[in-house]
Length: 371
Image (cartoon, rainbow, N blue to C red):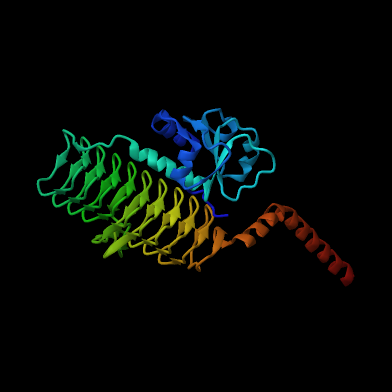
């Protein structure tokens, strides 16, 4: 089963959106199934107007089952409709109406995305913001108070720039992108369409480049490159992406970065790669497409991570990784080897004592033989 653990849609988030926007209107199972391209199993006319956790389901609510460890709740939930994977096999009678989807979690994400798009959209430039006369602005954009948009910035249609953001000279931002409060985008950076950059993120700051001098000091190396962020990228809160020394630091299409991630200069991240919080990537490292990096993974500089690599949390990577690798540990080793080794780790103190005793016994035997 594909691992979806990096995509965090919480019950609280779902409940908030559905209660506030979607579920102000009643929908039937048939209507929801049509939206999700799912198949109804049960009463297609049953209606819902709220959302609930599967373990706390109430009549008139919708819930979902994606994680197998919650399966037992589907037989007791009072929710009226449950989204399930199309291959779900019930072992006992289920009272709720089921909507079978290719992937229940993805179906929920689709539903929430539709709900999000029904929210009222901010448009216009608020007072106390600064927008240069040399900036080129698209239609239906929003600029919040205390935002700063510098000379020669190009902003496409339907872009939202929330308060206290800084958009430096010659920045380009594609259509339908949202820049949340406090984001700083340094001069020359390029941001694609349909991107989300969350609060406090810094795009295009200086890379960590210093040349050691004979007297023990360090001379700063000017960082003359830019950052390129392609379409459909999500960048979490307080994540930083450094501009290149020369050329560009590149975040390819579809990449999803969690909060508090550090991307150093001249790094390139391949399409549809996802990274959990506190990942750190050193300069000039290339990460392939469709990779998954767990929280606090650290990558050394000037290495290559192959496509489809899966790297477990807190791993330390110091050399190239082949495509399709599944590794964990510091330094990282194949997952199966790590789990076998982890069984041995707690036994090492006893093994050490036994080895010491064996060495002592051998020395005593040698001494007896000499006598």
